[in-house]
Image (tube, rainbow, N blue to C red):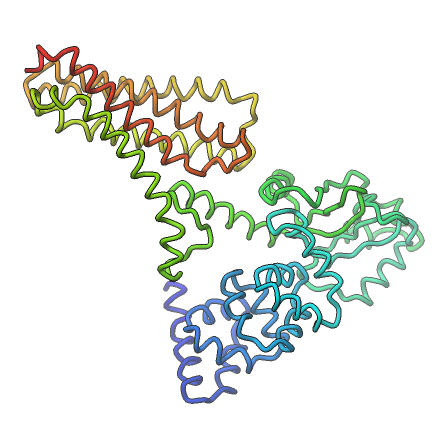
Length: 451
């Protein structure tokens, strides 16, 4: 049974209760669900039903729901809340989630909500950082203690604070200037003698990142070292926040979505199937214009061989083979390189060797496909030279595809751009144009044997 089949009946019951204005029943049905299931059911309701349900949820339940919804859904729901209610919900949300929401809200509404909040200091601190940095992803909900704090006192503090289950059970050790000094695990704290200081039981080799570091690099650090929590420091090495594993899961999902969209030439990474038509056009149409321009250039290349095509009509039949195989080979190279760059598995020093390997793979693939296609064309059309021309053209285009598919993402990364950005469009333009040029150029050389 799919998740849709599980959640749709519950959503129908909530929907019917709302339509009958039985709001207490709707709330009871909704709150009886686990938090993750609440998100799924809420998403199945239409915008009017969501807007009706929210005011009947208490502040704590609304905050927990907002913490788990996607940024776009949270923003849509929050825009319709009264200012005082919005401020209360923001105060109950995790500081990093509240900061994300305030950053997405219209500036005037965000400022008014901040003024209404009882304690906005932690959230204001997070708003100082861009969303896609470690500072924008961190939370200020962490536990830090001085180096001289005894173990017994630290345990008493934990008992008093009763930390949320989402706060990893690490204690970060700081000095008097709030500079990060080490980390203590809960087990080490429990087994330590009561008067042992945090300095004596801490691990001073604590992995940390700067608040300005890009979120993709933060995800690589946490994945590489298998961390549940990653402390974030400023330029003075002061501990300013912590990034938890669930935050990084969100980052990975966003980065993967961004790469997939950009490889497919979709500019807006927030685009969803249910997004308004104008947003679809804004995110997709510009890249189609660029693709049209490159396609017109390929058509111009073909136009220079019109007389040859007129003499050998079979050339027009096989042009799509050259373009299609070359484009697919280029896409394979792009996918490999973009993934390697995204995961931090490819350094600038490896660029030359990677380019060489992709060219070599292109030669091998070109030979393998060229022989098969050339033989097939000979058996089909009865002309060995046509098979030779097409086979050689495929060989040349596969080499170009491997080289361009690796080079374009590397160049984009070198100039500080996302390597997935425009890679597919640019590489397809290269393989189409040069593929046609090689194919029709060879045809002009062997023209007497093709007629």
